[in-house]
Length: 636
Image 1: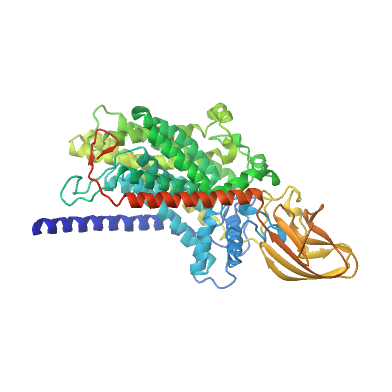
Image 2 (image 1 turned 180 degrees about the vertical axis):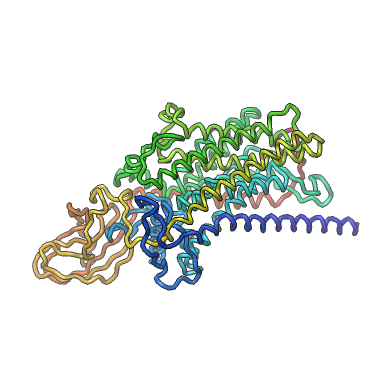
């Protein structure tokens, strides 16, 4: 018995060592993919908004207003200037005590913007937490990108391990980290929030599969039923915990990037029916639907007011700038500059790469009548589902999908159809891993032809994608200028309808002005959502505060509520003042939709905690189960 115990200890130790190696590999691959970005920019390089690559940028200014301690010089990207300004403003709001800062005080020459009332703040909570720890915005950018890449790779590994042994799952993880669209999101687009989407997609599939009762791959020496194998939780406890996990992941997805979350939800509408067609597991479908509704509830503090109050801003301006039907594969695109034209060609190339990966995976896995035993029936069905999803997502990025697109409600919420490349990237990575799994099975069964074809398909997907990412996505950024924060943040998209149509038309004015020039003002406090002003007025006058009049702003004069008017030329806050000395307080408070959304979020959070507690409590009583490889469930 002692020898058996020692043998089991060695086995468990080896298993821990293998997991440690995978974890180190996850960090190493993620670092290799993310960190070089921060050393590619240089002074005098091209800019995305420049007219040509020959135009040189001004010398970069330091982000922190001091000497750069880290020597980092990342290149200019599409969206990074916007994200940089917004993450600093969000941190400023948190710093002043707001749990959910909705007003960006520095935007639009000080007139502000209700930015995170409409733009999901998930990634800004991450950057704020990092800044609280490291206190340096350049380090925040590096650490945040690295964390996002590590988290995405780890999520992919966790999901892939359900249907693959360790090595194939590692291949899927590596492919997910280095395939071109994942890299272009960081290196050229600077799509900070969309990068966070890569974390949630594998986790959502993980919990969906668990709720639908799928088999889980386990190549460890201790099989179920052997002496010393760990007990499993009761089915009810497992379902509750998985439902809670799905709700949390889907809610976090909505807090992170709604366009990609909506596109992925459409994909689930294809993926889930395909899986339940054979077993008709309607209970599992209901659990998935209920969990996703709970996730929607978790995100309601953001998503409900954003939907209800969308007409308060010019929300259609993005579609005017980028009509959805001009973003399909190989379609005409309104080119803002030659640089963006080249970017669109890259997007088309990535569509072809991902489509080729899906086709390669389909051929390698299903072109043979005899299937290797390494691919259990559940894994084959998942591979077929992934191929279906990849083909559907690829189709939805083509002009041929226009008739279907007109049926799907709010499809243009994604703004760019090619955002679905994140989904085909997910599928390509999974198929690369599954091809390795098939190759290993073919080797064991002495099918060299099958092993070569499957291995070649995986190699092409992984190495071909990595080479494209390096040569055509990452290295060209050496010719771009080092990122230098703009002196001002103009946001024409998230701007009140009562404001000027173009933020560039806004004047530079004092925080408080008097139209009749009869008064003087001193700003005692100017926080993002709370301002205090001391004013002295000689004669009756009308004061104008440099803040857009947007629902939520409330005014008190000498601690008494006062009415707010909209100063028509600027859309700013205006109000009359009688002669004398006054204390003026301006606060940005929740409207009814914002309060309702917040209540729903906290109620959903309470329900999530209840599910976790019940699942954990129920799971204290272990039951022994066996796995039947011919079905998709576990039996007690």
